Image (tube, rainbow, N blue to C red; front, side, top):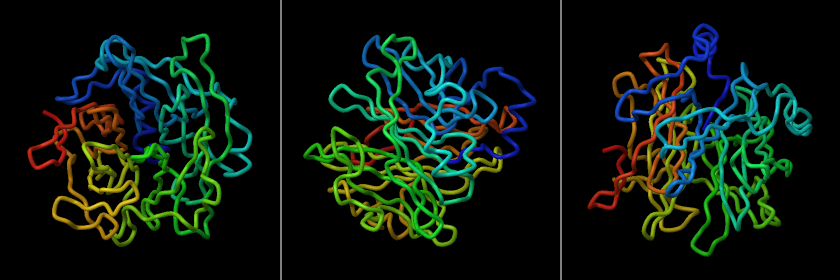
Length: 334
């Protein structure tokens, strides 16, 4: 769930290789168009379609958030459009954060029949950023009711702040109240309350009140891309550490921590707080599947991207099952 220009190596490879499908390394075993960065995965139930929304490619559709669909249970994917047509993104984005070329790291959350799409608008390496919101009644561009309504910025960070308002993740607490986790580098991953049905910050909430969930990794505090799920009686925070967007030189890994309350404290399997540099690694580089991260939890599945060492380091989608061990902790894959 992070940046965004995909790096010069990846962009160059995109230009050189055209639109041929990327074949991910096992055990992902996906097919079709899986050239995906920062996936937001929604796995359909039964015969329902699956969707992945992802970071926009500056070479496609003007950098708008991409939409992909699978009709065979998440195996074969095709790109079916974007959130907005080229040139159709909300005008406030360019006014609030000048220089944005593509939109990043979408998050999809359903509440009371409405889909809430949170996304990041920023430029690489800057914390002058914004998290935007749009709403719709369907994820499917083929549905006559499809169409996203702009709800404006949820949160904006300036260069004078010690946080970066990108990489949104939304979770409801035990009482059904929504919370927004966000952050990349700077002071780490933070959290603020939202409110339904608007989906914006709760009344009185401000950046100054943001709770620290994870960080403490020293300069440059390379942690970002939160995704939070509830399993059992606990909340589980997944995050990406290391460097993304460098093709085969990417060092991303996915870590996890556990908390009894949605606002933490999140601890790793050794009891170290994620806010103090802790984190239990559940995904790391393996063979040609380099730098996995930008993760998204949907039910008992983890969607993420990696950089394909067998295909010039291009980003590719992977989907793996979450397995919960007898010790209560998750692992990823078979």
